[in-house]
Length: 591
Image (cartoon, rainbow, N blue to C red; front, side, top):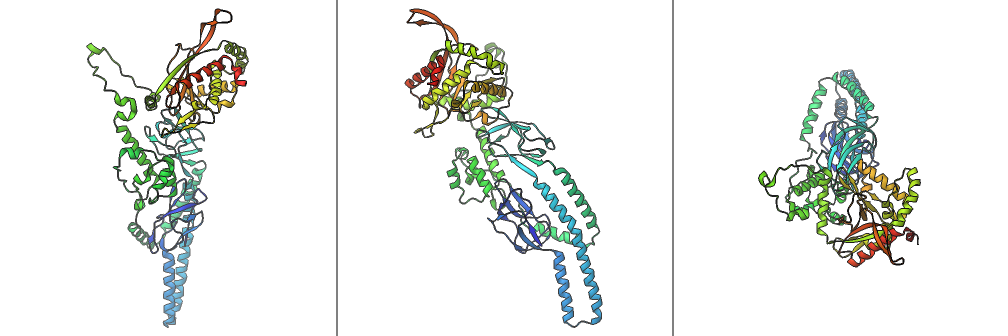
């Protein structure tokens, strides 16, 4: 009897482990082969009971649906062979011919019995195959690119058993940049949720199992077939019971593939938490027992796989072991003292404020989730030698132009503010001064220049500040920039921003609009090297040398903060003055 590979859900998969040997007696549904693809690891069960006579694949082979994995000799086949052998021996030994009719009757009876068993087992086999197909439709889905190394699960919006539609929001995750709703990758029934609220998750981590639409009815049919098969099998003689007991006893003697309890790693915290490059990860994979999908995930996560303890048979490393290793590392970071968070490490503990005669009444209020997760990113700024350059731009004529265009823009539903001019002028200035549109390399020996300008726009929300990104803004006109500013601001306040809309910024603008103030010091958002702050414009007297008199002019305060490791003070002054000049006369951008 041939045991073939079922529907794998992929074109092919690699044989990672063979769990049986020739001569083993196995029961139905015993795991015989472990297959791994770039999506999952799957243990293939045997569709029948019997003795393994041949293994048709080897570790490392690529197999596809319908390929023969092993060959079995069932008990029915063995008995049939034994009966035939006994009959031949009786015939050759010259047994009494009077016994021949009786022997023939026994052979016919045995043949009828075997045929009945085959007919009875056929529906069971079909039901098993049909059920196996349905199980194959339960797909485990991984998180998309979050734009950060890690994020926390803030809310789970569905429950096991819920029916979801494609792109329905099912998970809310929060990082130091934003709150992002993760959509359902397909429509169907939620079979299992693999994360919990409060868990730290990473890119590519499995988070939900969904059974695709249309599986329920087929599953019910499979269940009915199984029920019919059970009724027919109940009429078998006591011989079936002895077969089952023998198979169970054989099953107990086989090595199990259930994951064992993973031992906790006691390696150095700093080494375990450091994210490795892909080349470094590949170096450490030489003598590691793990499948291709696990190795690929280790490269994506930057995990030192030699520090991970395998929990499967023969210490084989599973995806779950990688995720457990990452989670343990994150928990270790949480337990570590506050000194790992830059500036907070130098601050002493607050004094005891319980004495109301000295301190008065106090009240404790929780920070918003977005404020809490922003603290580590803000702490990076304390490691930068930041300097701020201040300047004023005469936008009197530009404001007149905006007033002329505002009516037509409003008729189209577009909010046309001075911020659109600031974004366009700054983007053009960055193309002329590319060092402000760059990043400093990790070893502080090189500057990485960005070829396009991806402008981050700081937006104030009820939960805190969030920075969506307008991509390739240097190629867009004022109207398109104004449209995207409005759309991103609405999405930010409604918590509808996608991950891609929050990542990739090369420079940031923070505008305080009409909130007041004459200037402020915006914080450089590492790994960027510059940020432009814009305060409220005001009418101020400016000296007109040609007319020898003061004139009222609308002046816009600009505050440029920059990383002094990359930007010199003189260059910052020139750059800020250049932006002010472009804003005073946007026609210069066309030159």
